[in-house]
Image 1 (cartoon, rainbow, N blue to C red):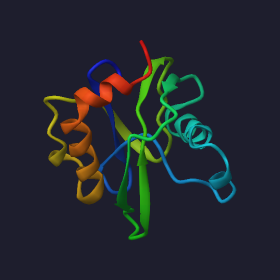
Image 2 (cartoon, one colour; image 1 turned 120 degrees about the vertical axis):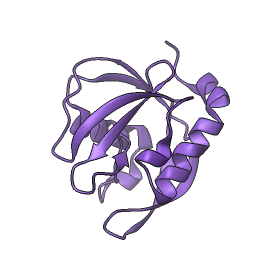
Image 3 (spheres, rainbow, N blue to C red; image 1 turned 90 degrees about the horizontal axis):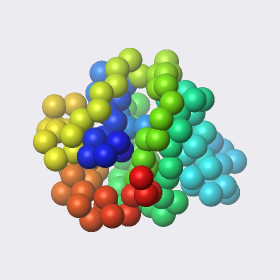
Length: 133
């Protein structure tokens, strides 16, 4: 997040909306989630991005990957603090969208759409859990 904005990425292969994050590596299941998420953020947004992250998950949701694999999504709240965003090869576009006015139905589908809609509906409560500015 950046204020009331959410960073929306576009998956290069599917052209669907995506959020920063990713899958745990084989050995990462034993590490704290914020450590694994930090690796994914650096991979997807670049080494110079600075952020803060609330270490407690917001909510858990079912997530079916594009390739048909079923997964468990764990949503965290973070705050963009600066640095140049450099997209990885996985994504070809990014855009900051206002959480309150953005219509996620235009880019997200299935379980990830449900997760973004939930985030929007609970935004005022979630914002209080966000790392301090």
